Image 1: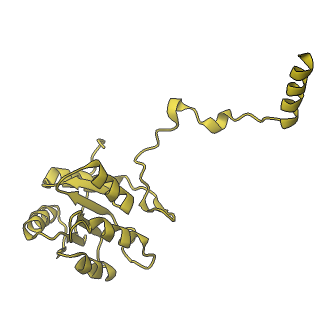
Image 2: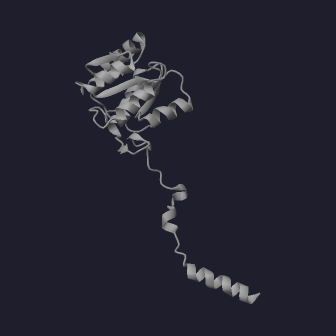
Amino acid sequence: MKGPAKDINLKNISVLVADSGEPAFRITQSILKSFGADPVVHAQTVEQASKLIQRGTVDLLIVNYNIDGKGGADLVRSVRENRRNPARHIPILMTLGHTTIGAVTISRDAGANMVLTLPLSPGGLYDRLSWVANHPRPFVDQEKYVGPCRRFKDVGAPGGMERRSLEIEIDDDEGEDEAESATAAE
């Protein structure tokens, strides 16, 4: 995820932090305000967060995976899948206290742009925010997934060759003629 960092400006960016814990919110709020974000609003439940998101005044959502006992992924999924949701395309960062491949996969598949490990550091949060701002990904809207494209970069096909460029037409008549010739030769 390294690359030339470009400064980001969070002035007048409304951030919703959905986290059950008041201390975690205060730390996140302090970091975000130091970046210029204002306002930084707190929701302690998925229900509160959903109501605030529906108002259409949220520019960035930071949600804890364990809000309401692992409801963070459900919140992200509900934001992404609701076509009438004014915040459907906003950047969403998921925070995890205990990072496992399963939790990261669930967060990604729910539609989170990025996953951050707790405790948050100003540098780590800034790095993720900068990445999301400077490397936008296409929005995917499919039956089984809605959210930013899960591919970070296009590395091409293995070995650098697309299989489709190697497709060969097989003429069924030719294959039958070869089989008949082999049978006749025996």
